Amino acid sequence: MSTLPSDRAWWQDRLGAIPDPDGSWRPGVSRPPEHPGVRGEIHQLLLTSYGTELVAEFFRPTSVPSTGVVVVVPSYDTPGLFAESTERTELTGQDPALTAHGLQLAEVGHAVLAVPWWFEKVATEDPALTHTQDFAERYGPAADRHRREQSVTPLGRSVADVMLAVTALEGSGLADGDRLAAFGDALGGKLALHLAALDERIEVAAVHEAGLGFDQPNWGAPWYLDGDVPRDHDQDELLALVAPRPFLVAGGGDRDGEHNLGLIREARRHWPDEQGLDLLLHDSGHALPRSVMAGIREWLREQTS
Image (cartoon, rainbow, N blue to C red; front, side, top):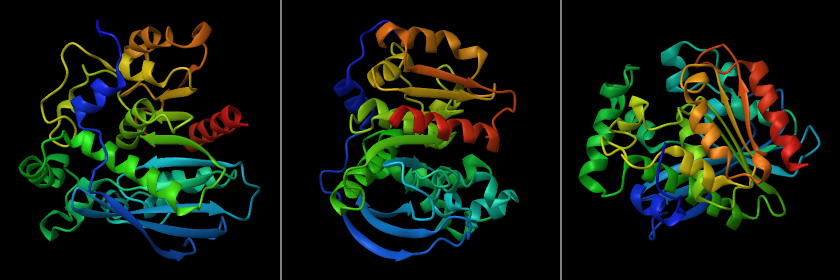
């Protein structure tokens, strides 16, 4: 637990979660999704962030009534969120439909802004890395490159990329009048947590298996905080920065569960009457079952209706 008060500016500076001042965006091409279940158009937003182009994708379903909500979904890559095969799904042998969280959100009328992770982009550009699932092998070279080129933390860079994507969405006119939410699973949950805490444009957010608490070892990984983990601050502060906006912590007992409920209880004190920081726990481990995803998307709809 932290002993110091929360401060959004302190966290942004500490992490370097500040959009590239020289960053820019422009519209890209549009295409229909490959999956036939939900109709609509996927619109590209081409981001230039810290000297690299990232391709975010915005999808508004037209085959179901709109909820008037755009859910920002950071992830390893964007096609996988729409049940389209990617290098990662081919590596793991997973059915792309199982991790198609963007498509599952769209099924109930949410629009989706899918934002890719810079470290995965770098990995897919190196033929030597295309056949490894090992995190150290796959993302170590990108972490080395980031360390050489940037002074911010890798996590801060990644959050800043998502912030720029939100700015691009606002400027594009694709989501005029829509409310903004955020959702992320695992890696995406880490980014969605920090996005909601540090960007007040996000009105409601949910994360699954984000791994709350800096005592969990993967926060120090070279592609997150690169060993520079805060020692006298913890993520109850980040959660407190979300208050009083609704926030859902979902976990399967691996990264989030009974072991970090104390941190969540500490953060809950910052919500009025301790209402608004919700929990959805299950016993499926790190995987996100479709039934739990259905509960998350319904929670998002309830909080924004």
